[in-house]
Length: 166
Image (tube, rainbow, N blue to C red):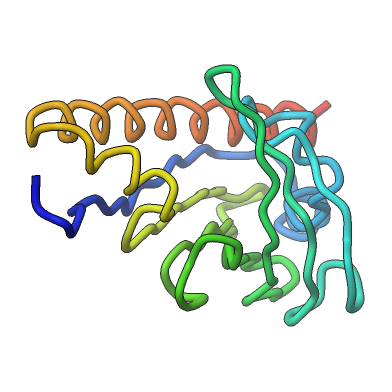
């Protein structure tokens, strides 16, 4: 297999929510609660800066397939009622490499919530693991990870919807 691992994601999950954009924003911008609805993120804590404000940093704790890990992240967009996004800094060469976001669009009396994940290159430890595989194995692993993320994101937006509408 070549030294450079070609693996990137640009995936999203969307749901309609019977709540105001501001109510939804308050929930998605509180990373300490993420473990309540995400099957992979178990929660987080603020490290520095004003919680939820652009430029603030936090640790995100994650679990999948028997593995646990923590990432350091920085809020890169914080527009109340509209958008909340963070870049994963731990494994990336630059903040644009791995970005998670929530977009909130008004829709009648409620809103549409979209979670998006854009990863331009895999984390170094994932790429290192894939280097020992042939191209078919690496492609299969990438497809499996994508499917896991798509499922997790669908479950996350459904969980946020349930929490906000409750």
